[in-house]
Image 1 (cartoon, rainbow, N blue to C red):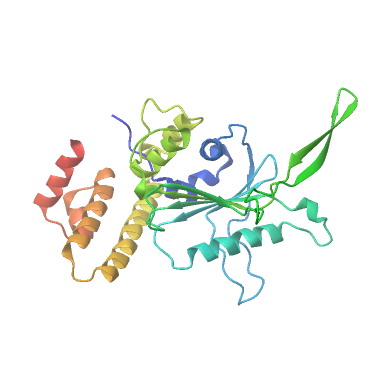
Image 2 (image 1 turned 45 degrees about the horizontal axis):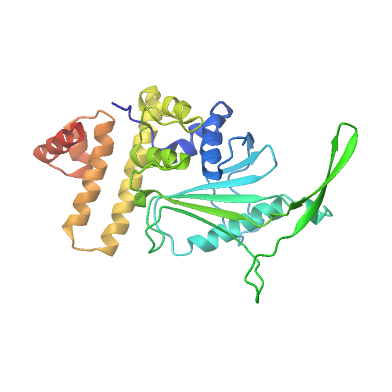
Amino acid sequence: MAKKLIRFDWAMKTLLRDKANFDVLEGFLGALLNDDTIHIITILESESNQETENDKFNRVDLLVEDGEKRKFIIEIQNTHESDYLERLLFGTSKVIVENMSLGQDFSEVKKVISVSILYFNLGEDNDYLYYGTTEIRGVNTNKPLVVRKRVEKLLENEIIIKYVEKKIFPEYYFINVEKYKNVISKNIDEWIYMMKNNEVKANFSSKNIDKAAKKLEILNMTDQERKAYERYMINVAIERDKIGTAKMEGKAEGKMEEKIEMAKIIIAEGESNEKIKRYTGLTDSEIDSIRNHAKN
């Protein structure tokens, strides 16, 4: 039986900021971009500084720089925001600007890749993994414009000149955790499975996902971490319950589903029925039913 893991969104906000755990982030990003060479150098400032009182606040869970100086914005979003896409656009633009020094040549503009891990339905399509970037196409040919840059490399005391495609526009990845159907067809699916189910199967083979399984195990948490984690999960459930209630006021079914989800979280922590009743209002028989269902 797979061991229960800390939810990935909580790990992003806490454990994965530690350099000792960069290998977990490297595995995740490598699977997403299909690039096992990704090596994280550092975690940068996670929340862009406000220059004035009126400057928009750029909320980012992690801002990462890899060995190629690419910047990765990794955001966790548990509830829907009507202007979420606009905020992403602002965030990527600000990272580009903040990493340019005054007078610096524009050829030094840094590549930014934005990764959103969403625990709600952003749109109406049924996919769970989305990708997008700015693409310039011919009006008459409908073919993408390919711009290349000259690159010189020294190889055995000889200068080799190559022309490689310039890819400077920000790239965006959306992972819709709730729409994932638990079907493994590629490496990134193993990570999304972990995000949705808080477990790693024994046959998973994506790079460093075995390390994620060890480092994110709930049993490895200190008492202080466990209490903070519990508070976080309860707050997430409460916040989602508020939004669900606003959308479906008067519908008891929606509220019951949220209570059941909250109960599952607290049960996974090994807590008593009394504590679960205090947070959810469920009866002993309802809680026992959830416990028995979880065992099966």
